[in-house]
Image (cartoon, rainbow, N blue to C red; front, side, top):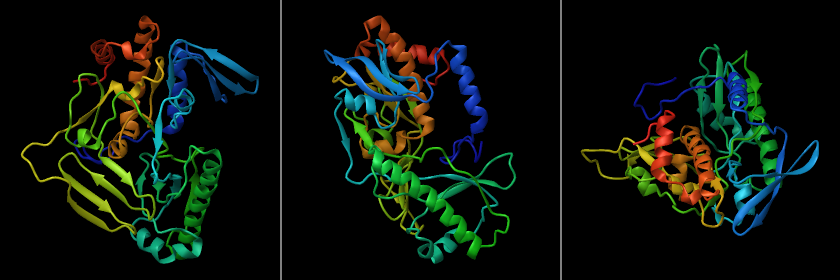
Length: 352
């Protein structure tokens, strides 16, 4: 864990290599069959429900039948094919290719980047980096964005992957030429670019920025969050943070920080917000649950709930709700919110 508890920047750092194996074991322990290297292709629909999904892998094309389906594709591929309405913003939050770098320079990098970025074909941008605990000198770097792409489009996603990797190599070349980092080394790039935003679906409840920032309570809440509203500018590398205590911090293009308030100071501030179950269901498809960044939100709320600490709770709620829906003939909207919340609490979730 880095930073201190009750700090808006507190977080946990995961050993991703260990996590992969642990998650394999977790799935196997519960008798669940893996389908690695398998791609979703299409759905068979009837009477407002999914009957089967078609998938393809090295064995060819096949179908998987089920009574309840969970779309955790990130872009909502299953939901889109099932006819769940969605919107794509005119200006999407840009994706980022992160990297693990050995001996990344500390102070002065931002000034170095601003002075020499054009030589290496890099846009005006800003980001952050953090040390990896237990590995001296290793830094996780998230310093650039790929602007102007919609990663729900295969052609644009491919271009974004290539550009993101090019940016990281260009940044290394910049530091080697102008910085003081003789032992700099690019250690690891991700298998997939970090996508922030594509489709946002119209679900039975659309969580709003106001509901998040004022800590609105819901009778069907399945998750509690405290991560700030975090919206990355569609160009120039800036981003806006809005906190539950009423403060905000605008990182302008080029890295300048402008503090302020989005509301007047009050005696009491909400300490968390809630995500209702209805953001995961849609009347357009009776046996489909949405889990991930495509749940129903407006732009501001999306900036808060799209991160891992919130979406792992949404994923657990989707799994529990799917099991409960089996007793309702797969009708996910018929799941009793109280029963769902009790089951989550019994499993260790913090439910209020």
